[in-house]
Length: 275
Image (tube, rainbow, N blue to C red):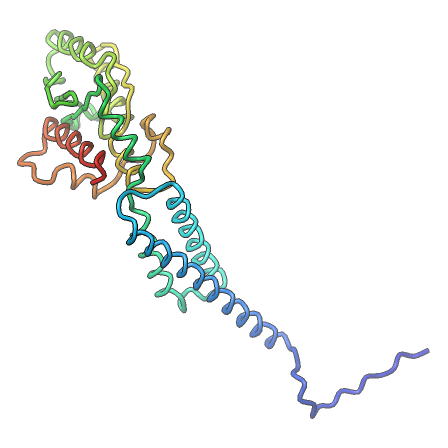
């Protein structure tokens, strides 16, 4: 039996779903869904901003989790907009969302403040500052001076580390003795350890092992949610942070190892109070 033939009325008002029509419908649907997701993120941002106005002071872990989730949603919106080719249409909106998110994300956490406050209770806290110089002929960075102060800004060690070999050994042994058993706070703990190792190798001396934390990492943990605190305490992670660099030297007459160490300690005390 032959299948019945279907007659198509060319005058019918029923839309013809061509490839072009289907593509147009898909774009329209995607746009509506995208706008709905933007509205959801805007509502979340408004809710968190309202909460921050009503509750002053450090943020809780729950707030940080919400803020982190908003950041992930915005990143997903940006990625989808680029993939779907709609990014030019929503660029302004996404920039506004991103700006509001970044303002919210730079909040000190209660846990971060507690960490810094506890750090200041360490009787063995030692803050290091270093002056460095680049030796072009030897193609190496040299520590020319090192300063170590305790939590009360009392100087524990302050001497040059680029002396003659015969004079360097007693200076180096004093440095190792002063640092032994201390919890070291340096701007970049791993970088300072590497520089001291290079200096020790140059003079044929033993390298002091630094146990402590990177000030730059603690600063970032204080301001940024979702920071890996254990990694910060181990001294890991990048330390490039121009705002921190500016804060370290703001108001100083000269950028010296002593000035850097004192400023790090004073900033630590300020942020431990939730500044």
